[in-house]
Image (spheres, rainbow, N blue to C red):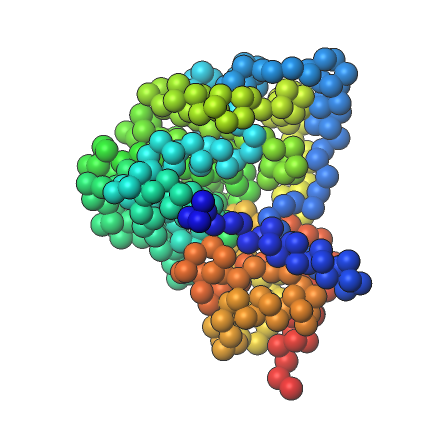
Length: 383
């Protein structure tokens, strides 16, 4: 148990709530959750499901109609045909990561993961007994990786490689050319499975495309895809995600579900069908707001002394370089919370390669972002 890490966003949220309880005004740009309500049509579908009697267990893999809706959605937005029988509906995105680490991680194994990256990757790799091998995300490449450098890390002990695009915490988007190079190289390593975390797949800007690894037939027989409803439909509290598993692994993934959570919530699954098949206007509205906020926060961060910030191409995070301030990431995180009343996350919350950076979420109102930038500027001004 001592090998398990945590998700620092929740720690910072707890500290911010304590300060609020003491009477402090805190602007939270640390948590990775949209500030929009779940669209009304989805809420009503969930309420109706409860009234209609969806009070019982569902099949462990999830409702067949929901798995079919996932397959339709994948075809619509990723252009890939998948078998609904290979879809496992799970309570959130993390179970798919957890199951993959349990399958492929063991002492002596190596798992490649993005760094800076979602902290649960490294935590779960260590918990499984495997050795985490960081994939460096490069600021000068828009926080994407160099495929040749990644391929050079693969050896006979490598069991799994994790790819996350669009990415948390950087907002980086891996371009098609880099993914093509990676996939081509992976063809020479058939013993390596791939976990593609695509939870932010519909959150891209400036006409950029999300390139799903489902497009590459040569790796489909060892590809696990992670996605869900939390981000796109502002359903973080509903706790629902899905994993697409190769035919050779779906039975094992289902068994892990049976042994851990039995099945996801029945009425939430019905609401998720409405999310996928119902109107998408609310998603478009939310993304337009995020795009506006993205531009405001990047301009504001670049105006701060000691900060420089590249424009994120996906998700709802900025990852400014703060080395010009002369402070360490954790030091500045603490200073901004205590002195400015602004909650952000140290880059080291996402791995050791995050030193020299902070993560700001722009999944908060434009007004909050502007107020937060003013407060940060006041703290950073020389005495």
